[in-house]
Image (cartoon, rainbow, N blue to C red; front, side):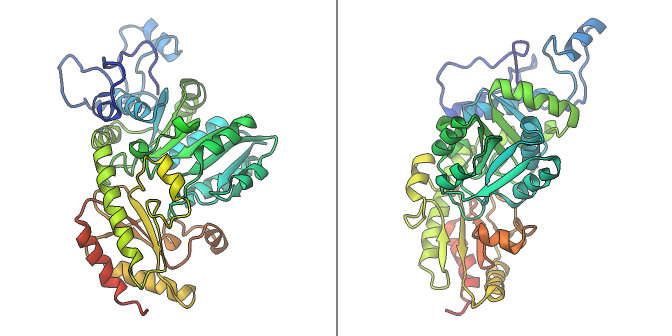
Length: 410
């Protein structure tokens, strides 16, 4: 839910920096004067009289009514994230995929067309494909070739959807170019900003209309809760998304919102530290004879290095992927499993964004539900390993990966 006139705002000086907004934006303190944001674990809210209740349920008076579509703790998280992304409003959801579901339900109808990068998260591809049975068509195109996006546009195209950097190849799309393309055709651009977060990248400044988040990742930052959000204009949130939330109820719980709210306070510090470690690890991996290629936007060898540096504030981000070779797909998969299984520090899990480094085999986990043809089209081979770098000492991470790499013949 987004706040209108009836819910007061924190009194902050004009023009404060993002790091200050990450710690201070939200709702005013309660009369108790708490310094840490309050956690409102309540399903409903009491009204002074029946007439006021009727007015609030009819949206004639703004107030918190029922936590399925409005809660003070959730509102604090929404206001803070919107401030960081530079959008007018935000709506929290129960997960990142729920955020994408809310976006599709709120914006599209049968007969509409979507253009989407084929390099987005596997579940996003499946969700958009599933909406084909409701008459929403999706064309999947190259993440990086704007001409391919342009060629896919139709008179009924309503939405362009991109994830940048992508998972797991860290491909970077040109947000400004895609925004211009969308707007020239009367469509909207949605950007999944999961990997960078507003600490490194603010898509709204480059023309994006909607920013999607899995708060489960870097917004929380410690792998504790599942959460999601859509940041957009006041009009889109109020008129398109809140009505769907009231009916469908993919609500963010107040406790999970509170955890994400506290995670936002350290977001910038964590992302800078994790990105620095990721770049050093990527540079080290490039020198290993058992590694065929390393994908990290901070490396000059990355195909979109210059674009990434321009869009991401000169920082490559905390996620990298690398490829171990094999004579065939089965051998490459076996070698990848060898590296992963030899780790003793990295956590073998498909989640990312944690202070603990995570390692996974995308072809059999995050993108395992796709067909082999879809994975190949997205550039995800059996020898690919994704590492989301945490806050451990980078020398320990090098030693952890070196153990398995030493078992692969060169």
